Image 1: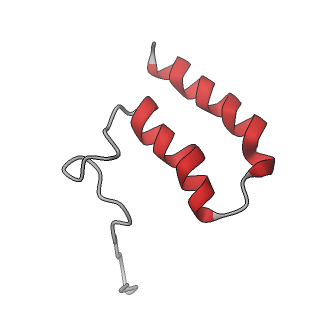
Image 2: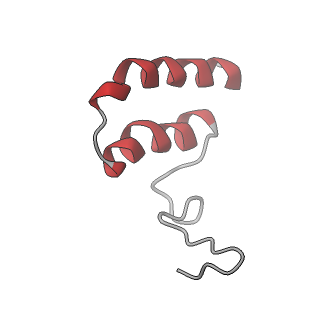
Length: 63
């Protein structure tokens, strides 16, 4: 399956389920992790590939 097809499938899922998602954790589980895993091809459960809650401070904001 091409990346555009994978993205279209996830987009359809988001459109159908967005009204049910109430929390940040639900958003991560339903939409973010599938995007990283299914569309981009990373193993979200492998800490060598994906770092959960990675702090990326830029500018003057620190943590």
